[in-house]
Image (cartoon, rainbow over all chains, first blue to last red; front, side, top):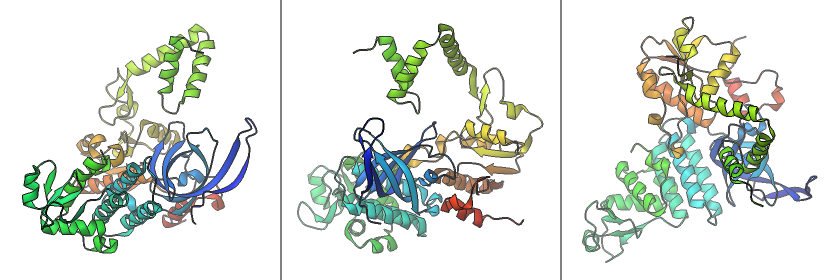
Length: 262
Length: 198
């Protein structure tokens, strides 16, 4: 169903006279915070962006609002008064439960995609493709035999969509064969240029990856997504290291990324 | 208009409690203001007693009185020591106890795995669980049926199999007294997948 944020009805609140609008929106549950009162505050990613809502008694098992589980693809009906911080969810329809995301080999990467999508879309105008990409990534993690490859490819692709992925096709200094990822500039450098700007091998700001790894990184960022997933990098630990340092510099502290064992 | 400083402090402190927003905190503060002094003193004393008189059981991490060496369940010799039920929070122990259907012991994790909240295996009470596995024949995984609870249960099941301990998971299914038509798809699917001979 397209996200039309369709207004199903509007009317005056019986107590205050303020206008109340009921809307329906597709969403992915990025975060879910259960409250002791039995309510659930959810951070949702829709084609229009990230938003927060509260589901009253959402912790009760078996109820309509219990479908608001982490990573679920849902269609929610909600309403919000003009001065409310949080929308109030009244109905949830489940479009896809991804049980495979609870597997220990997929779970950390699902958290990574969700947290990355959340931090990349805070107070930012959101490209509708972000929603599609995260939905696709979560389904990939659910179904694919190699969730790590899916997580790595989609994490770099999310950064690319947010406009912060590196351009590593050639040395940004001389146009030569690159060997280092110059993290602050999001560019690649050859060994000579990296040394010239103060970067030694594995120094703080210039990370040595080598020609092959940089080509793999370019494929992760810019190549066809299916190919990036089906032909993952050979030395994945090196790519996770690069991703972790790149994200720390350009995005900030992403706990799910720091918690990854690799 | 400005509230007096003690009232502002009370509203702020009440507002720090989970599930209490600024409006609720204000309502509670005025409610307390209107109660007799003896009621408020009894509440304050109960809060202090609970804070100073409670501790975690060193074996199962359930709530216990500070004076007692172990919690009531761990101290009870009639409990089956070979059966341990793993739950997320102390409130889950109380819920299972209310059912009256379980006679084993417990282990409280005090959380679930959630990398985006910085909760990994080291943040849970897993080391203590591995340390008490001697003599345990079965571990019942009774974490919530949310994605986080399911992921924690799967992680535990794999680790416990490596320790050579039999595991079981609480059953999924329909709530008693509910109509099939109103059950959600996931619950109904699980209920059919885990049906039993009848």
